[in-house]
Image 1 (cartoon, rainbow, N blue to C red):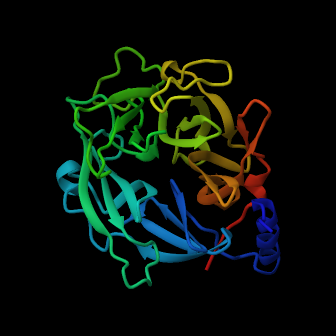
Image 2 (cartoon, rainbow, N blue to C red):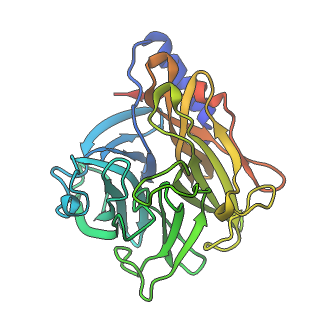
Length: 337
């Protein structure tokens, strides 16, 4: 019988009763995939940090994807310091593609790359990441968008599209070619979500138009777009929260519950932080084994605002909109082995 996250959390809760000092998984920007009976979690960190689990509660740290650094990273982002941002994992035709970002903090001196592998199991004989290089680059003074936070979705014809973006002019969508490692030609670009950028903000500055971390889930005849609004990584001042919209077409328009276009500032709230959990966001969303899941990070107030992994069940209302229970932020507690 398939267990819900709540049922798994009860198991985790029993573990925490006897191990109150057990370490939770501390991650930013988590994404997840399942291969066989094992879940794999990838996150921002040195070389891309990753974990494995058989139950989504107990996680084993597996090390890093890149033993060194991507060969192109410092050319795209001269201040790159081994910290790779916001990965995204996808599977196509027997191969896994792990997209990732390098950037200067608060700058759009950024690039998105991709590495591929036949398996996610680091103990498999054919385990070997092969970096495919840079897919996309943003350059200050040339571009008013930021090449970070990639996410891949296939449209109804199987064509891959990459959404990405942070601050500046918002969330972009661009078509990839059949290799999934380069932009399709002729290039096809769309703006799918944006917040108002005040006049007079210098182009080289991120500005206060706080939007990033797109993730598109294809389900029930719609493409659901999730993005994070607000500020991440500010401890008690973190205002990160997740908003959403949906479209019948991968290129949009993505409309919220009230029919507002996300490219014109629209977005319906999915989940926000509370007194116990700040900075809730940078989510990914999946249907795995018939279960709809929202994966994200949140800062725990009681633990000096340390970022923690959160996995929540998603339910669907009669109008086809997803929801999550904010109480699951407390119920779900991972355990790092």
